[in-house]
Length: 173
Image 1 (cartoon, helix red, strand yellow):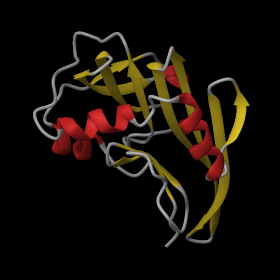
Image 2: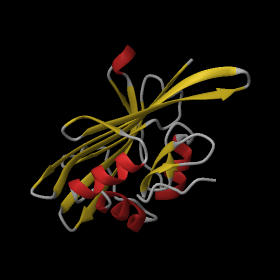
Image 3: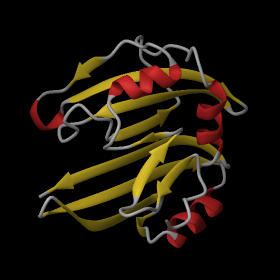
Image 4: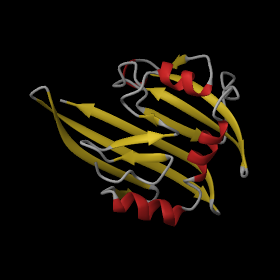
């Protein structure tokens, strides 16, 4: 096994690299894994067709203020969490986590310093697409079929304060 990406929001380097946020491996964990870890939260859907997202959201206080963490199953999620969004603004559905609050804080704090984030992403093969956006694609063979997997990270800072973070994993055959 290769070393694990050193973020609570991490690229798990095993047979096939995976993005992870606060212990939730994207594209591998259903919402029940999220709510089992952080506590029951209402899920809701927005958009339609290609823009459809099912979400659960937690609200947490950090040293830089309140953050809202959305765990998302997008169009290609198939009921699994394939995206995470951290934002300054919440939704009426966002609730405080009942369990494991520190894990969420640590995951957010891992993205505080832009230069450190970029160094770590580069060390794991992510390519900078433009300011604050990185991606990494790889092929994975499973049951005789080849899948293209792409992971992307998008982050925005203002004076070393994280104001936006998105992690996504997409898979196609």
